[in-house]
Length: 235
Image (cartoon, rainbow, N blue to C red; front, top):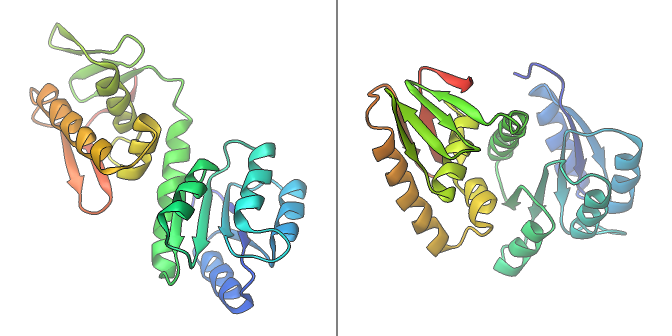
């Protein structure tokens, strides 16, 4: 499934659930390192290099939020997914303030966790092209730095939000751009009003890209958006 072995730090104090998750992730081609509490998880993180962390919130010795804060003091970029039985909005917001990439409430299916992991890893790989400022999008040339979109000799100036959103879509061309990730990246909050605002900008981008019939931004129900383009990448 993976081109390279991705190493995951899995911190879960429920021994049975932890072993099930580790075994499942290993069968999917991941190198999953299971730790039973927050302190053990922190020690493991300081010893090894991990590509992603899956942290239970309610753990002995050091809870998942405290562990995430410690991890962020060492590495500001490693993706973090929280697992918790809690579902209160305040807890979710606290997790995101600590730099969480996602949040999964128990009970959850292992397939759902796998889907979240794969989605985050796609985004991380997309970030590797964050220094790219000029993209081919079908017959369009998009300059994210200048905030311009050129087509057939005509260049249009984009607003900052239009440019930021199109850059995320172009960086993940032909892959799903997670709705919550886009909201947190651009609007910094995935509340109702920001979500409606993003819908408006998606509509604007569709109009800007309509001149090339091979290019489209489609809705992926319950997940986000996908920029469909036969030609994508840096110029």
